[in-house]
Image (cartoon, rainbow, N blue to C red):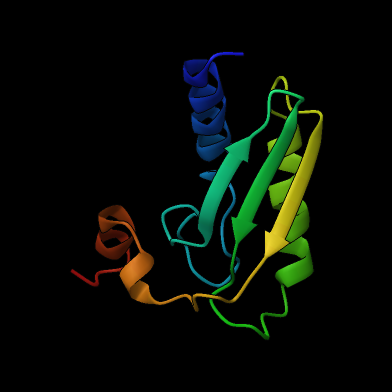
Length: 106
């Protein structure tokens, strides 16, 4: 698998993660800045490093499971490894311009 094919697969995963929404904020988790890293291995393993808006988020398990299942739906993804981290802590500085605009924060 070429570097370009791996990059294309990572972009496909990013696009599918834009369909996962934080239940308390009407913006997808990708634009919220909750996805820190997406890596795809040629063996079919997707590695997702993500955070939550707050460490005590009551929806943490549901969000992680949705990230796992949506990522697994991408053709060529055989396994999904989701790492939940709070380092660095999430802040609104991680939000995309689209998210800030959507929430009226610009």
